[in-house]
View 1 (cartoon, rainbow, N blue to C red):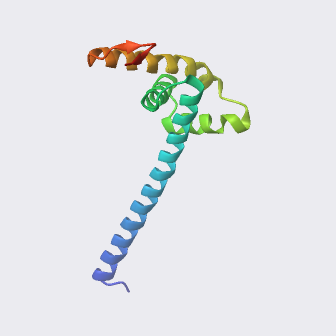
View 2 (tube, rainbow, N blue to C red):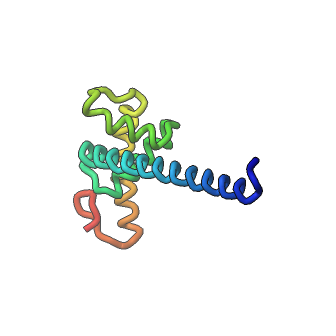
Length: 118
């Protein structure tokens, strides 16, 4: 029979194991998102913060979870196939990211040259 102290210890160990599992999943997701930002930056000729903005825009406007959009983008070069909904959203997301960056630069009072803050 398990005593009260052993039960509490078991619950604490289980809670810690769950937390470690969640942190591991977060690390994998974060790495995947970072790689997808790299794909978007390369394809769209964007800066890193614009790549993040484009990735968020695609997720929000396709109703596809960010992690899934990221996975599809990262697998795109190897599979040579991008789901239609993401393929169609990519150009609009790149344009949105560029426009957003220009608007943010103007708001901050920075001069914009060639579509980039100067």
